[in-house]
Structures are given as structure tokens and as C-alpha cells.
Amino acid sequence: MVSRRDDSAAPVHVQIKECTTVASSDVHVGVDCVVDPEYALVGGGATTDSSTGSAAFLRESRPLDARTWRASSSARVASNPHHLTVYAIGMRLDGVRTKDLQDSIQRKSVQAPTDVAAAQVDDGWMTIGGGAQTAPDASVTDGAARFLTASYPAGLDEWKTASTDYIIPAAGTTSAWLLQLKEEVIEGFGGLEIRTIQGSSGHADYGYGASSLQIEPGWALIGMGASIDYASEQRSRTLVSIQPGEDGRSVSATSRDQFAASAGTTTAYAVVARKKAGTHGLCNPGTALESSVDSCVSAVCERRGSCCTTAWDDTCVGLVELECGRSCAEHTCEPTVYEPEKWTYTDETAVQSNCYYYAQNKYPVSGVGQDPGYTMGLRPTREQAYRFEQYAAGDGLIPSSLTEPCPDNRTKIYMYANPFSYHVYRQDGDGTWSDKFGFGGLAVPTPDTGDRPQHLADQRNPVEAYMCACNHPLPDQLPPRQ
Image 1 (cartoon, rainbow, N blue to C red):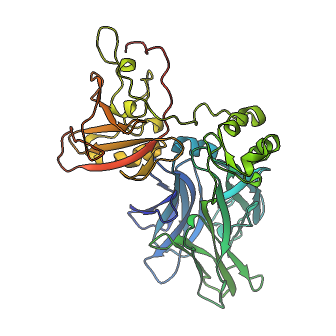
Image 2 (spheres, one colour):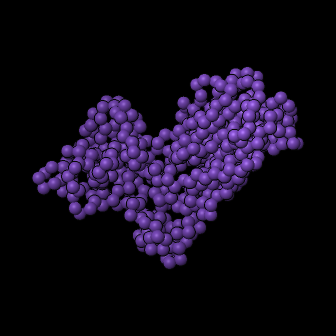
């Protein structure tokens, strides 16, 4: 398994997981590749490699669940042991809990008893990725199979797929799979801009045909596709691969005929994303927003025009729920205040929140963990200290630095981790630092050295990170004792 990341389009972050079968075989069915838990699956692909001079072909390349891409392949008629590599593309957005992003992405499929199928995007949604699957009818025998000839985006409104049999007739189905996301501002992030691009078509009279494309700077690859156009009714040419480049900044597609020459052209496709310039969430003050970025912005600006001309102020934030029915309760950030009395019971024992929860101004919740990754149901082991920052990003915290200001009234957090221990500090609204050691520790001010909190945790082989958290005021009543 190989994992690579592309952060060049930050605050959009992409992971590409590459999973290859250990053994070669004539047929690979349902091979899965899973992105890391702090990413939401948005696309994928697959490629075959052959141990003989002939080729193996794709029968399936599609999303399976919120983190998994699945692919299948086989030889055609003659034996051809091969490996199958599956690619899963995951996306993370700064300031957005990964679980929320995963839940907001819908998977839908359309199955047709023909050689073609298409899945249409719903009104108010946009395509972010898609895939394809083909299978012979259950009545088909003699090892007959079907193979993919297309899986690609038709703009942002549709995902098209096609398949064919060869030599041995195999009636069956073709399925189009679509991943879609609502076309609206994402709280904690802003607007997500999506577009599709198409590579130059590569023609081949016989043998391999290929196409590739390059991703422009500032955009992130989130989906891949390919199609074959036939020069005639020949049915021998099908897809061998839909795959990303080594750096995740390109896409290539390959097709091939087998046993009989089949002329045709191959075209690679990509779905790419970036943050819409000048946008931000609706639940915190910021710059003025364009009414076209979200129907809610349009409604708010009809009520208060300055929200789209001067600034998106507290009044604009207050109109979000009134005009749009969207709650800002979980998304409006407030600078933290050092209040040790809200962390100590009358008998001078501590509220049982740990340092990570304290840094986010959170009281404990029964049955919910308090370590990085808790929103994803995870608890990193000591050996996974190097992943604490990644897990915290999956919780919706934004990677930052000591001097970089936090957006949206967020609170600066300093995280220090190693295989032996970890500790987290927060910078309160007045610029001073405070922290709380463990469940039994009291909230205390933290000594600092030049605005940097003094290290009080075990300092062997450290992983250090500054992050920004969206904190909320504590309730007036202390939580029940755990």
C-alpha cells in the first residue's frame, strides 16, 4: 500500500491511496482501497499490469462507502495472470470535521440492462466524482464476461458509463455511480469550486491507446475518468487503466484491443476542486459575500444589502437561521477566556476533561472519547503520535503556525506529542496560554517563552503542531461528575 498527499491547493487537501494485489490472478473481484479516516472518499481508479504479453481489463471501478473504492478486473478469453492496483482519492477541507464531510457526500447509482448507463446529479447538487461497474447476467455461462469502455463526467450534471462483451456473448448490466455534494457554502470552510477537465484524445489503430492530462496549479485532483470512442463497431477495445500520476497532479487512461485489431480513441478526464476565492462560512463575521455563492447568502443580502457589499457582520450571521433555517449553534466561534472556576468543583477537584478537550473549551460527553480523532470514533495509540495532527485536522481543527492568526475567532492550540505522552495548550483571547493536565488536572496558566508555551510534557522525539479550533462559551452549570 502506498499513500501520497497533495496539499498544494490548501485549504483543500487530497490523499491518494494505492493498493495492489499481492498475488497475480486471471480474475480479481472486489479489490478494495481505503483512504485514511481523516479523509472523505471523493474519487478513484484502477489499473492492471500483466505478467504476459497480453493484457487484462477493468470490469469495475467505483465508490463502495464513505472511505472505500472498489475495482475488479479479468483476462479476456485466454489466461492472463495479472496484478490489480486500486486508487482511492480522499479529500479533507480545513475547518470541516471529516465525519460531517463524509455524511454530506451522497452516493447514487443507476443500473441499466444495456451497454450504457448514466447517473444524473440532483437539483442543487454538483458532481465531485463517479465510477462504473458491469456484470454479465446470472444465466451467462462459459466464463463469459463484460468489460468497461467508459466511466467519465459529462460536465457537473452527469456521470456516464459504458461496457461491452467480446467473442463470447454476455448479456448483462452496466452501472453508473455518482458522488455528489450540495452546491452551497460549507461551514468552517467556504465555497468549494468544482470543474471537469478533459485530456487530448489518443488514437490507436491497434494495440494500446492512451490519453493524459495535467492538473493546473491551485487545483486539487478529486476524481478520474476515461472513455473510448470506436472508429467502427469493433468491440475488442476496452479499458486497461484509469490512474493518477506519481505526484497526484495528472491523470492517464489506457485502453487496448485483444485478439482482433480495434481502432479507437481514448480520453482521460479529471474532476478538480479549489476553494472559491473570497468565500467563508456563513456563521462567523468576515468579508462581504457574493449573493451567487449560496442561496442563503442571496436571501440574507435581500434583507440586508451590506452583507454583500460592505461586510458579513454579526447581523448577517444572525440572519442565517432566520432567513435560511440553518443553525449556526455548532459553527459560530468565540475567543476563549481563562476561567479556572469553570473547571473546578467546590471541593477543588477537577472537571474530568483532558488537555485536548480543555484546549477546545469542551466538557466531557458520556461515551465519547477526548483524544484527537474523537469525532471519527478513533483514539490514536501512543505509537501513532505522528498522526495526532492529522486526526485533529479530521476533528475540524485547522493547521496553523505560532504567528499566523486564526480565522473566524478561532482559538490557537499548541499540540506536543511523542510515543510516550502528548499534551495540548491553548492561547486564550487575551494572548496568554493555559492548559489542563489529564482528567484530574486543574486549569492553570502556562508559562511562556516569547509567546510560545513552555514545554511541560515529555520531550522525546516530539511531533509539534499549531492548530486553530472553533471554540464555544462554556455553559453556566458545571457538568455532572464522571
